Amino acid sequence: MTETLFTNISQLVAASPGAQRGAAMRNLTLVSDAALLVAEGRIVWVGPRAEAPGTEQEHDLGGVAVVPGLVDPHTHAVWAGDRLADFEARVQGVPYEEILARGGGIRRSMQATGAASVDELVALARPRLAALHASGATTIEVKSGYGLDFAAELRMLEAVRTLQTEFQLQPTLLIHVPPTEHRAEYVQGVCHDLIPRVAREGLAAAVDVFCEKEAFTVEESRAILEAAMAAGLRTKLHADQFHAIGGTELACELGALSVDHLEASGPAQIAALAAANTVATIMPGVTLHLGLPAAPGRALIDAGAAVAIGTDLNPGSSPVFSAQLALALAVRLCRLTPAEALTACTVNAAAALGLSDRGALAPGQRADFLTLHSHDWRDLPYTLGTNPVRDVWVGGQLVTWPGVHP
Image (cartoon, rainbow, N blue to C red; front, side, top):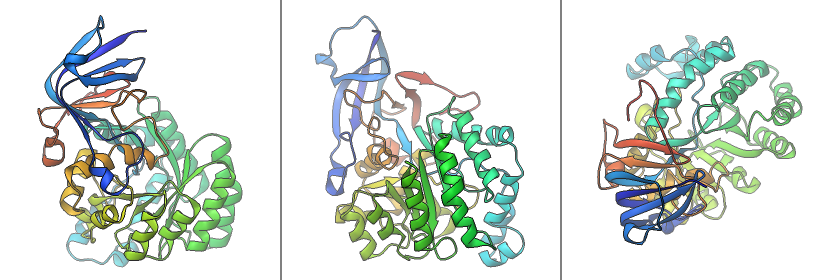
């Protein structure tokens, strides 16, 4: 068994394995002048360099800080077309309803994505995923949801499957927008045809639903999530982005992995998440780009919830191609402390995907870690406008992407 001892680490900083709740999100382990022993892609030992076990192979990391690889638990990285005209109209004050009436909005993305082949979708998504990876995201969730018709949804998931040979991806079937006609038949088709096929072909690990006034009702969302569970898939939910209509409570009741967005969450939703195992995933990039109120990250943690952070990378509401930037924005917009934000982007984000083998720097964990340009790990949440990540290591191996420089 080949072992590599990584040495000359100024600070090695991480949360404990597993989802951390409330005040425990601030409890990081910090080892100064540290070393990290890796074998067969897993961490074997971590501690002070002076106590490191002997090994034939040593790698000097140059006196910089090391943190776990980040996990991005919420992206829509597979899409075609653009929303640049929508962006220009919105900043000039055009209401979203008018943008939709002009043929823009999410329907524009659905039309372009539905017309794209698997190969085209792969080529479009690859540089987006490479940018996320260079920003520190060693595991990335990718949703479908811009297809509407089932064939297009399957093509999106086929594109994710192809890209899994290059990136650590977690695919999710997203039931995103209801059709304008034959809505009940569509939901029935999702439950009885699409979800079973996706499960049978292993195209997704989870099913997500957008539960919102302009999307799916609580009752429709329940039917879809129950069909997912019957097919052996995990569940997630978009909820409380614009209105709190009961989606968060449904996610907690059904034991969903996570409920995501939460910009419109109030005391009842915060209390439900504090009492449940469901992870509260916040996306500060949406607040920055759309000007929505920030999700109540501070109140969720103070109430005892487990909070994660995602980029929500998508063409319309969060063109954020950096997991590190999402982490930094959560400190500024959602009032997380730096330690809480690191926990939210590592072990808690992994928990939001049902993963327990990554996000921490502890024996038995995947050897996914980042070396920073700095000797102090706090440059990760502090830095804006340039990337504080020097190198990205996945399974103990250095990974680089042509044309993408950390």
